[in-house]
Length: 255
Image 1 (cartoon, helix red, strand yellow):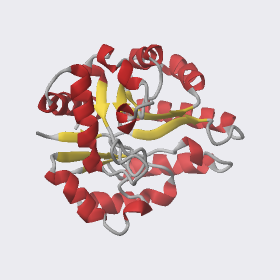
Image 2: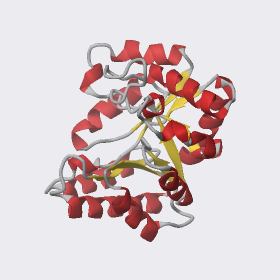
Image 3: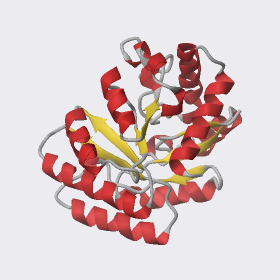
Image 4: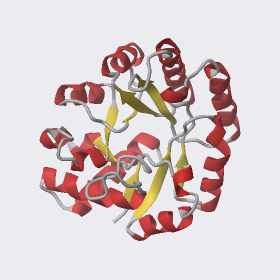
């Protein structure tokens, strides 16, 4: 049973004391594929080192996280373009709009999001979207950029059924993580109405640990808890969820 974690920040400082052990623990449980989203240029070397240390398991993305879009965002976007010429990346992400922390750089976030979508199309890569308190703003841009050349993952989906259907209409899979195990997560109430063709698994580690680890550091091994909850919701076996979501990840990322 091969499990794919489509979103995990394994280069995070949160894993500096036990990174190799944590990754091996996940691999031992069948989590063999890890897709690694970018934040900004300060993490590039950490990401490359992670890939080098675990060949065949780590699949890197390049991108500028919306909470890191500041006055210098144009230089960060230039760094992304430069890295795409030097190294193999499997997606542009995570990108999007985040209005939870502040709205000061909304225009810059919108511009960075739009530019990175267009870059992904140019490079024939999928996108991985971060959206927090910004569904309308994200959908507004996706509506303008939609097309056969747009594909990807709506990471950490926490919206409504209607918002899920809208995201899927843009050729995006829903990234389902620890929130599906929360009592107040709400998405568990309608995920049975979402075709498994439209779902991939993720952890977003070290964030958003699933029940029973909620509030603690998340790690890729805990994706098993997400998988089990999704299997319960859809009334299928754990093996079926692992197989289907891994197939879906291959469709998105091409690897």
